[in-house]
Image (cartoon, rainbow, N blue to C red; front, side, top):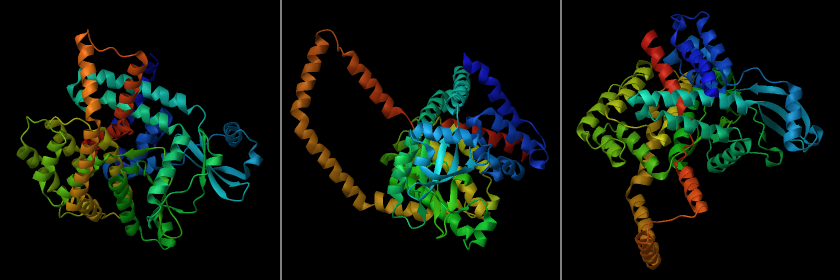
Length: 494
């Protein structure tokens, strides 16, 4: 029942986005929107962080007002931070850090202090906000009540799988609130990108990391949001826009593991001109079949081969078979053709998102958990890139990464490699065949004797394994709220 008492928070946040004819006219309304989202709690701050990257959708005044939600919220007390570090790491602060400075950044979930280790290395120390778990739990209860109510009354809500999306958010938050999981994500991305010349990740200090404290290498860099400072340091904002998008796509396609919170507060440029990402609480994963689907779709759009793109959707059963492939290809053409040959300034992302949303509804496509966070991150990344280069063309930026991946993974050599994997699997199957036959005979005997009975421990293990396989790792609810907010703002104020 606590979720019922949290509903006013959801209502106030939605009302702040809905009302205000002055949103695109400046004035106090954008500031009021930022204040409302900040006061509603961490889930709503995430929404504001995303909207801040899309002035082309919400307007310059709103985006500017929301920027402080990315890393400039009010910090909690320095004395409390010091006590939390000692409590979490089980040592006196002087035994851990010879210098421990005031907070340098504060966001919805944690704040960061600059420190010097007892060995003399400069470090960034991230500390969870006190009480953040209960704040998120309250927000999740409200969102869960909303999702259940919406699915009860609305077929469209059932198509969007709102309950599943809230469960996705809950699973992701559980991971994000354990800084050891974030440290592991940072470590994995560090290993995967160590050979990249234009993108880098700070390394983790595991000896000074716990569930509520994460210590990593200190980065001296220029914030990517500060175009003037970037130019003064000799960096080319247009080149950085390309690096950002191509690094993100390379992570998604090559590794199937990508940074999924690339707002400007998490991006810096070091003295060597390399893009540096921080804050790895939200990461996305794509399995091999989904990466092939994504790359094929992107390459198909770039080649303007809409029939190929449509067929890919049918091959992975995203579109029900009662819909005609050619008609779906026609709908994709209606989305893709208006984009090509136009300046980025002439392409309305809000209108494009609205058309995509309408197309998925018309063809009964359900939300795909693996792709939702990818799509949300792409929207944010494009927004950051446009901030660096107003004429940025995400299609042309994406082309070399997509074409290279398709050549390496969908070409003849890749087909031969997958065929070899198939023969290996067949050989393993042949080895296991006698045991499989024996298992089948035993199963038939059990059914004949009155049914299959599982030990309770076995049943629980099967349930846990099924839950593990089905649990997506993405913050899809925030994506949905952001797209709805953007669509509403476009509808009423464009």
